Image (cartoon, rainbow, N blue to C red; front, top):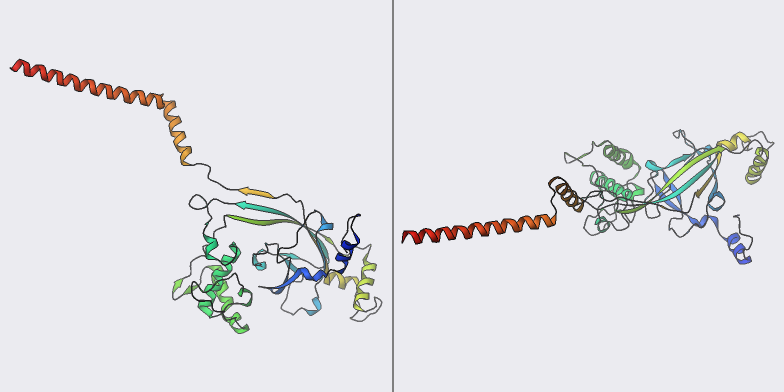
Length: 340
């Protein structure tokens, strides 16, 4: 149960106690299969910092159900925006059994300058059905090329924010079966990663996925310790065996010993380190106005010239030209008088 303030009303206590803790988790498909997303709709908010006011979980690894092909045990976690597809294969971090992990997160906001002065494209939102992110662009790039080569896409690419029709009427793409995924889809992903994929004899170009002009990201710091500690191991053994309906003194395979618990259980706490947001903005450091000002300053320094001097110099040129022309007319008039 979460810690409640001392002045909490009975209604608040009843709402917390009656709430279903699994309601905030939604199933989602990723490269690793079926995963669960916390706060997928982005409705839950945070008003305090620290581990007591974050997400705390005790997870069961269940190594007894692993296949012989799985050489790594634990969980993978990814912190991402609710509107962003979870690319846990590339960006997730691992949690190992027998550990208690603390993940301190901070929210950062970035604002970029549009092209050509910056790297973002302000019109990218019009090309996607949802909020544009680099993850959406990369996954759509992979899905389009996979559909061209294999005629199907992997199960986790079937998302509403992945558009494959390219301006044509929408048609639900075929999902690759296990054989097509192993013989074709995996080869396409490998070829795209290595840059060696060719379609109709032409090499597939790299994806053009610039960063959005405004986006948010989460940075985190991870620390770990052993779980459970030697001081409470007997209590944890008793608790786990009570939940499983076994006895800690049994010698059969169903009994949960401290070694088995450390091989199958872990705890994780994910919380905000601070509620402040770090905002970073990138803008051009040298504009045309700066160039004009610098050129004018250098001319004024080297030539002693300013706007007033330029006007005076122009006035002198005009006056001198007018005087020279007038004198030429006077000399011409006198020469004609002498010839008469």
